[in-house]
Length: 223
Image (cartoon, rainbow, N blue to C red):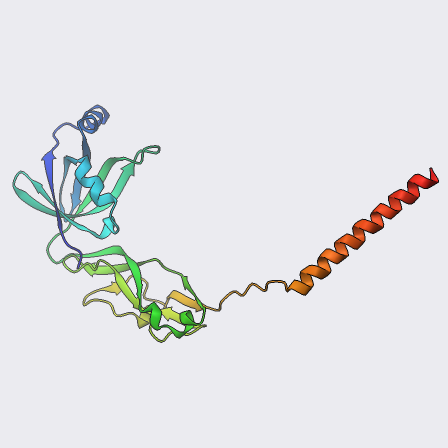
């Protein structure tokens, strides 16, 4: 299960572009907390602290405990507005997570036991179709990753979602088909020309060059 990260926040009473710019100049990020049938509140958090989280994988599936005026607010990052040039965060939307909530999140896929795959050991190629899975999860049981076991897979195999063991209470959002996560493709063999073939090509090129030189000499003699 993904661990909960604690972030301290300040209540933001003034809103608007001017206020937001002033907050950013002070090294903080304006943000809001919404959802769970409660009022939306405006806050700001420390930019340096949050950027550390942004640079880690799974930011949109990581539970964050925002401490505001001594009270805990468990949230998920739902949207990050970034500067088009610097890519620094300009504004963040946090979704408030209530007790017993079921949420939809994208969880990264991690492949294991590649060394136990006969298909890969024989030169096959792992073709990843889905790098993340959209899953419905209990808010208190969000997996950090979904492991896909490649043990025993051979060239031509397709790994479907039905072959993956999901944590209790977790299920895919796509339920109308057994979708593919990855395949084991046949190796692509590049056939290198032999030494004899290279010699033959060079001989043909030399003969062509000699023939062209001979034609040019005959043409000059006629003139």
